[in-house]
Length: 334
Ligand SMILES: NC(=O)c1ccc[n+]([C@@H]2O[C@H](COP(=O)([O-])OP(=O)(O)OC[C@H]3O[C@@H](n4cnc5c(N)ncnc54)[C@H](O)[C@@H]3O)[C@@H](O)[C@H]2O)c1
Image (cartoon, rainbow, N blue to C red; front, side, top):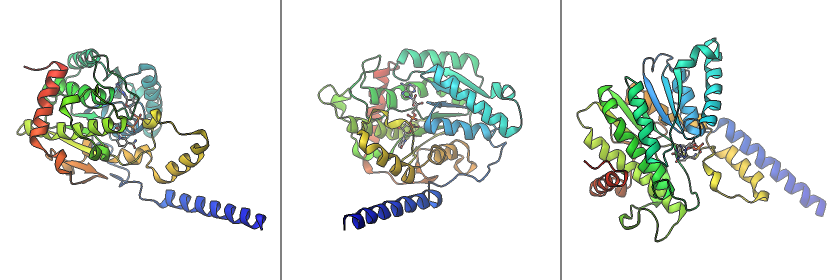
């Protein structure tokens, strides 16, 4: 009897694993932007990607390089970024049948810590001195559900990195983006924005801290920022759109504790159901490069298609107020 139960359990587990494997290999995994892609689509274009050394940012960089773009990786950790850049050059060189050195100038690493306004300013100053043009800015870097921490300037970490750091970065690079127009800004948000609110009375979460709420709030801020910026950029030929990538197998969950015994199950589930970084990066790549979205601005996308937003993400008065307060917080109030 006991033997029969064990055998049944094993059979069920095996069946489950096979079903998951079948799903993984035939599953949707997110719409691919292109099969093969036009290798000259991004030729002559310079793209800046924040957090380009891992996960979605790295996959986005790899694909845009393949499409001919020159990519600047804005990364917090220079050593990790150089390591990722070395691998990307290797992959690019192999794909083009060249030595990695031949692709040296196509990929540039620059230090950028979005948790430090000083670092963002220094990064932009150097970039503005060195780069004659910027065709695409991809605000991709992010931090997810970390314990309560503050940035160098005293902001709650998730709001500080995901929203304020990118807010300052974008504002300081707007002149270059305008002079390079037609140009594009792509903002990576998350569907979890739905669970956030912009609580203006406690943006630094000093009264209470809930890591899930603060992540969602920062991702709602990304959307409100995009919509307000699109309004301000009307008539400039600079577009800005925001996206959610789906659930993707990356390092984003580094602050989430999964009990040791539950890890194999988590790994199996994520392997079966989560997108790969390349699948997850498709909407970023699409918004950065596709002729289909030329001139489209202020919209929200998932799986390379426009999606509807909840009313709270379209509230113009909240978006304006957030913009005004963000200007004061990062010190660019004119
Ligand atoms: N993975 C998912 O399921 C998922 C879902 C929805 C949204 N997103 C969003 O996608 C984006 C990319 O995340 P990912 O999943 O590739 O995770 P990831 O952790 O692999 O990549 C995040 C990148 O951001 C960088 N970063 C973090 N703090 C930084 C700082 N202070 N300064 C500069 N760079 C910093 C990291 O170094 C890393 O390169 C994030 O904005 C995230 O919120 C991811």
